[in-house]
Image (cartoon, rainbow, N blue to C red; front, side):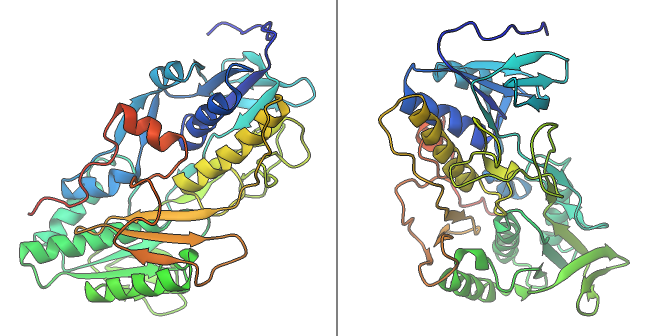
Length: 389
């Protein structure tokens, strides 16, 4: 790739780094809010935007990971796509450098490069949320077919998003019931104080009731060490016997030279997404220090940053701070359930757990701009009921 010259366009240049939910939402929000006041570039190492929330259905033969061409998405938005990934930022010169040694100048920079997914439980099968060579699918098939009697689903500690592990367990319970296999045993082991307690007291309590109704045992407040010799080692507590274990990945940040980050590689930002201590540099989504790594949260962060940038571009808008609201569509193998909770000010009775979404959009990722945009070009939410085995 040839080096790119300094921006000669009289319009301010907004450079967005990252082709995930946060990056695409930021691009769409900026275009909607600022019109043609700025040029917008989206830089990403791959040419695909991957819609991952439906991956939990893949091991059971339903749903799939959807992929969209980023060039097409950016063209539809009136933006420019560049395939590359940055390695450093010179905030004094407002310039980024990529792996090819090229330099790109910016007037506003939005970092949305996501995280690294790592193995979290040695010996367990890791569910990555993307096609994983069929290991999770093989495990679920063996469980439903009776070759495995007990499987443990592990929610790792640290920043992340626990919902997919609960979905895997619930869908597995539904498939076991449909198959007539009454001997299969399912257990969830989590570091949380209660199931999905980040949503709030009411939603967590009702989630626990659903798990109990499905016959899924839950062990809370427990950290997993490894799975070997037919047992899951945990702290505190004795090893838990099982035939297999499946876990979610642990997440690490992606340190970028020139930008501040904590010990785990996550970037600190203020309520409008501006990187602490830097001017005209923003970070949104999973790369930030906010501990919940979820598409809807990433979209809300992107909206806050887009409003702040649009205001600086001269738009008549009062930027609103990021005030996190959790919305989760829980696939259960039967009818979906909807969880809602406000994170601002802590957890409490404002949460809900219902069979109808208490928000307008029924999609898995709730984003002000990205949800209607993707729905307009593709069916992003296939049926949530899975085929009978």
